[in-house]
Length: 89
Length: 351
Image (cartoon, rainbow over all chains, first blue to last red; front, side, top):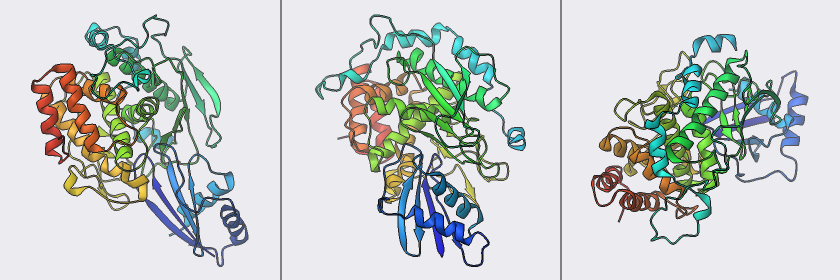
């Protein structure tokens, strides 16, 4: 599974993008489960309203995407975003 | 954390901020008494009415002291976290808590003494801030009712409480929310951002007692990591020059409408195109000289809070209203001429 995270906005207004392929990773099952739940029905498909200076995130998983904004993230979404931005390329 | 703290130092030492927060310097509070501006309730006034100079607190029931509370997130993200500092408490052992507390005080002091405004909502709203939000979190934001600060990752960014203008910026989002409530998208969003930069910078200048030509006009000075090529996140004096770094990229801000950036990202480029009204304010403040919070800042403040600025106002709407405000406050003189010239130089029409 290919997970792409794009983070925009924030006080600095500096964009960050990272992608991670779960193939061969020891935590692949865990990350894929996080990604599936992030894309669960009911999530916003388009841009969401955030708060002033809050980060916006687009999570793209194998071509399907979801938009999220701080501070309204679940712990699981935050874990997924942190892992991909930190360990992805 | 410790390495971050040792690298970054405060722009305005907390003891100076605290001293200023307590000061009763007539130099500062006299213009404020003359100003006696107000806000919010006046939104229905007709467009032709000049900004009224009405005291926000005619009965004198609002406190002239802030009511601050600092919460520690302990790297979690469920707001607000654990209360660690209340108003009047002894300084914390945590420098981040003390910096946040001091800067909330400096911001409260600025709005009250310069513009006669009691806190963010003009009605004495308590000021709450949460620090140590998330893990290595590279951001600070206003969530609609309080401030939130990350510690930074220590490489690209340090602790977001190091810059008093960052804290002033966030709290000014609260002031905007309670007044013109500019929509956080496109040009109105860039105006919202710019007003936060303008008053964030003025709060720092006021705390340091600087005149327009002494100020650095930087936003987030001291916030960038030690190896980053840059001086700050934004420059009002020279938008687009704050940083140029392999990790962060180059400061994308335009200074004039010729370089206005059309994008759907960042809420339509709110942190990018804010460079244009930022630069207009810098040009006005330096043209008028002296303390920027006096005439230039007062024109901007009265325009923001006067009740006539629409939530979806664009740059030209704001520019026209600042000219009208300058005329109402100072008559047909150098102030209004400087306002018109400043907007003209950044390519925003005022007629």
